[in-house]
Length: 248
Image (cartoon, rainbow, N blue to C red; front, side):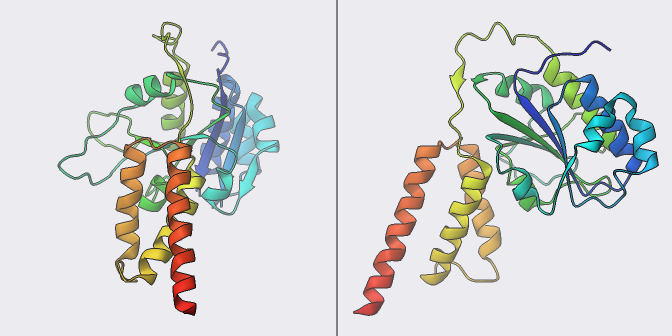
């Protein structure tokens, strides 16, 4: 297969992989498609073992230099655009699934992407709802029958689609990426959660589900960094006002 130059620093992130053979196969794919880095979050197998190395072949350097993280949020700290894959997911009536082809065309509208991350979930159960909310876009790979694919097969399909040049050079009105980062969103909503609990708008046993709904609104609106900074500024000012009123 001919190597294709990536127009951005692409990070493949595997969350708690169970199979060393899958990890080795993905390292080989990273080499084939010039991925900049392979990252693994809390692996449930020996990613540096013989089984992985046998499958990696020319991708052995991706295994040797693989960064291992304890949490997904830490693996995303330097990423300004984050995508996540899902197989089975419950959608409300007003939501629709986003396909790989659609998300591929969406990211090609941006210029100056510093670090693009694609998150792949566990072989047996994928990503949790909280993990999916760390991505600006989630997408599915359309299949005829079973919605779940082998992990390495899913990675190969995604990398192939992202490397296709269809309509890529013809997009003239590219825009700078100005989306709020996943970590920026996560930190803002931690502050919002504390504030809404404090004023009694949220209850401890339901706060997580309601905060997740708010996050979905922010992600769906493709909120900018400045817009989210404004929201966080309002939260901080409200906290300051509450604290000072308590002193009176």
